[in-house]
Image (cartoon, rainbow, N blue to C red):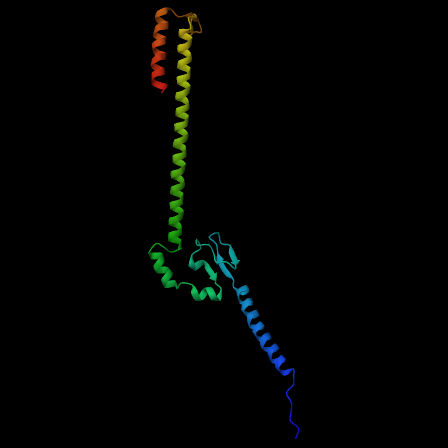
Length: 179
């Protein structure tokens, strides 16, 4: 009986099959992550699909689907409820608290900005009064005749006593407004 000789290509064929098997396993491993999709509902009611997890503001009950790998590592509802109770969760209560806190901080910043603006307006008005008082004192000290318009529209020239009184008023205003 003749002895059967092994095919010289059998070894190469087995190696090719083994390599293609490994390749197929790796290929299947790459397909699974492409299938990994998150699905959640935003607060406005829009359904979102993504390969990235939802933002932290989305509560666990609004997440409709998780990737299989993420579902294994996701916290259990009991654990997430416990963390919500501790104030560290992402549930609606803490989300509402964060919104309220940010609104309060925004209001505080707005009040501070309004106060700074009011201080700037007051400071500008003080500087304007100072400049006006200095100009008035300069005009009174110039030696020129000073006239004043009364309530009826008549122009009257000031005498020396009236000029001295006006100087005192201007000096007091300068002392009060010019620092």
